[in-house]
Amino acid sequence: MMKAALVGCSNPLKTAYRPVVDQLVKILEDRGLEVVVSQFLTDDTLIGRGEKRARELESFFLDPEMGHIFDISGGDLANTVLGHLDLEQIKDSQAVFYGYSDLTTILTALAKNGNQAVNFQLSNCLVNKDLLKSGYFDRLLAGKEKNKELDELEVTFVRGSKMAGPVYGGNLRCLLKLAGTPDWPDFTGSILLLEAYRGQPELVASLLEQCRETGIFNQISGVLLGTFSELDKLKESQLPEEILLDLLPTNLPIAKTEFIGHRPDAKAIRLGKECVFKEVGV
Image (cartoon, rainbow, N blue to C red; front, top):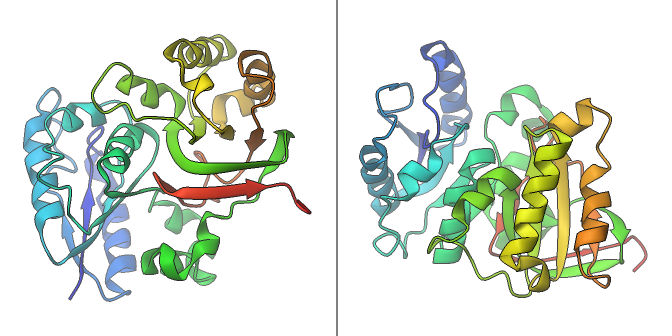
């Protein structure tokens, strides 16, 4: 029987979250998976002790029966696990790792390493029942080879009409934790994915400027913007595209989608894999 694991490599979950974990276990068991739950999900003594969680995560990747590893956490601590993760040891693992937000650090490092990394939050299945009813989640589990449409997100172009390349990125703030580290990927010819949960206009502007200073805007083939939750609440959702129109080379395409970010209707996108996005009719 294929296995699935539930892990939390970012901030520990509150003990009150346990009923949610039980519901997620049932979703996976209903699909014929044997579920293993991390012993560290609700352990709030682990701040600054990422090595323990890294060793456990490695054991899941090295289990030949492990097919899927779902991280259901978020916050700030994922890079404390990544710093202890032996990527070379798990390079040949067939397990797919899923997560979002702060997990952008681990997802990006895994994608660079050649592992299967998917920007997707399993907990959305509890809020957005259509992910289960429509069969979307089952198709996601089945894999890209049979279901290429999973990466064909509905996008709107701000500039240009087409972009293609492997996708890297995710949460803007968390991606930049990797700048200057060995886990920073080669963005040459790639699509840069950016979204954010927290971030007033000043912070978003500052982080986008930091992206420019890393030089990646001169390497990528385009930018795909997901949702910026705090800016949306402030009625400033157009700000990232306005800033990027000034910061990016004038020939670089910019597109946006409502289906990547901190929303229950968010869809999955595979990092490190080739994607093509184009305007309808192109």
